[in-house]
Image: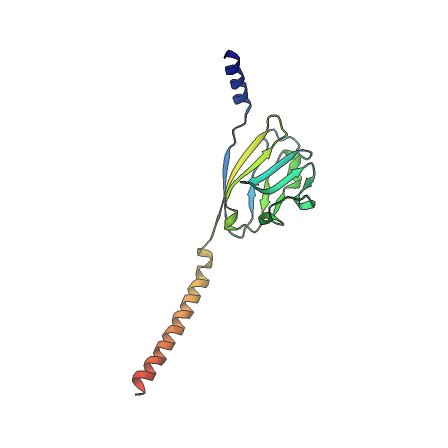
Length: 164
């Protein structure tokens, strides 16, 4: 029993506890999901994998990735996700999601399975709809509808009460 307790202690001290980072962007904009090793070691020849639940967002394996023909990326993210190529030599595996959608909101993980110990980073993405940005157009539309309604109402009133 003494050996089991020592083994458990060794296992629990070697695991890396993921930290949670929150990113908030407006729908249609770009979101950068951060993932960087504190050691700043060159990761150009390392495997890292970005997931959203069970969806494959972006996988990089020593230069092989979804944007240069690697199969397996979830269709929701095709042609919208890229990594920061020049940052790899500084230990930065952050990705950029372009043209964000509300459906992109959720929990993402950046996983380095081959590092010793393996590293996991967690990012929570919130994509918001900015109602205020469209308020003037909607106000104009409401104003136009109200104007048309009032004109129609006045014509009906004029037809019924003024021409009888």
